[in-house]
Image (cartoon, rainbow, N blue to C red; front, side, top):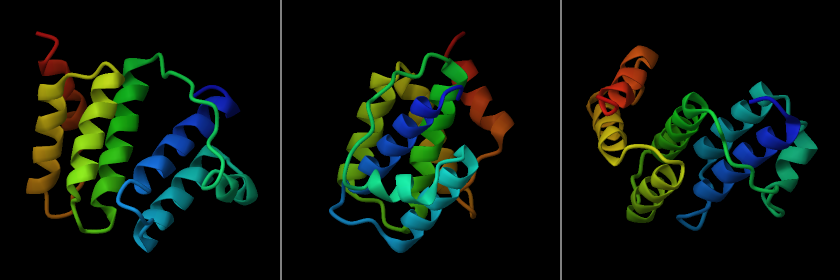
Length: 133
């Protein structure tokens, strides 16, 4: 993620995703706070994104799109409840990012199988690479 505007766009997309089920669970908010901190977004700016979306910027790098999909998947699992609206939205968002529906399904299945809900980065990338062949 190169620019501040791209970081705001990414975080804004994650916040909108967290709000899909009508509320932002405390654990979702904690995860969003961590991501904001890692991206170098000030707390006041971060909190403002809950009311006013940042301009959407398309992620050009496939690696960054995969990482954004994974962040959204982590966010989807953060509250321990998989809402149907979240499952539909994450698939739509992934397709809109140009990601393989088969790879996305594989990643979500791996997350379900994992006791921690996490997927090793090498496995994550391998699942997407497998769809290129």
